Length: 436
Image 1 (cartoon, rainbow, N blue to C red):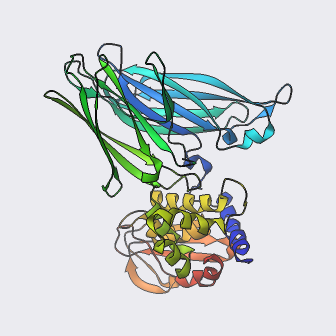
Image 2 (tube, rainbow, N blue to C red):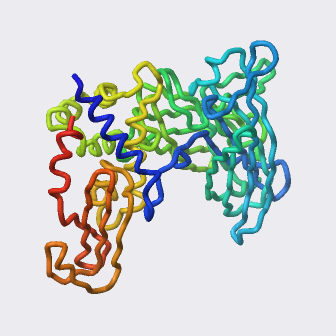
Image 3 (cartoon, rainbow, N blue to C red):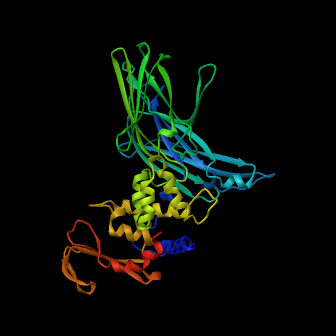
């Protein structure tokens, strides 16, 4: 019963080497979506322009709360949104501050509570790069996300569709006004319905609209379909639809919309992610996340997860990690988050002929974290007799882990960046620690 604790202790000892490594940048918290972001393109009221709506949700546990008068606690942060055009000139931008006040200290640590804010820009249709920064005004910690997007034009003479705003709920007021509570890509906590809101635009009265919705998973398999007729409501007709969460597992999806009226037709394809609470924030593919367990999960454990029914597979995956959770009883599993943070880093830095996590460098990095030091020889042709071989190679690297008294030799024989581990025996006695 002490195995998970021993595994955890060993893993985090190696994780502490992040602060000592030299050549390879550490995987830091900023690699994660510490706040949630969504952008929606709709028609602008300004002639010849398109509108970009930017939505931001910040979890309470990412903010620094200070004691306020009475029994309350208060945090302040600043949001900055800058929009750059194709020539990298600033097209627009603004900053604003937010104050969050809660009534108890317990609320300050909740990752399931958010502060929500939004802003809009009227821009000429085209391609833009949007940088969004969130800075805690007490700690000055800044988190930044960058997005490239294309704003579409909406021809008043043609049928057209806005982007889809996904929402946790949508209410229609007695006067017909629609109020949506944006989802903003936050994790789903319980089964229910995910709502979508979009607009059908037409200056001409074309009669009722026929709307067809199709949702496909990452394998392009159809998981949801609905076709309905909606009456036209002025030049901008709101369309609200609901998708039961039970039909959407953790992963990426494509929403296809087709609107028809008389002889006119408009189509839109939109990608979105369903992220269930408890799953690693850096992965959106459950099947791939299970495959990536191969470095730490024994055959019996992997078999149990893979043999689970599709609807039970995510729970089997979470049960595996629950047994290794260093802080049971809390919402976060730090060990799981660190593991998949390293997987993400491996994919971003070691991919080539194979996915980064499948490479030898990726394997060592995922298990041991960043090395203390790296020796590199990128020469086109060299020999390394002291490293057990006299064959010609294109390049080599040696990763040193001083605290472990280990080094790992990686050799690229063909010049394509496919580095192979030359001394795998250096890992042999560590597998008994990592395998669960």
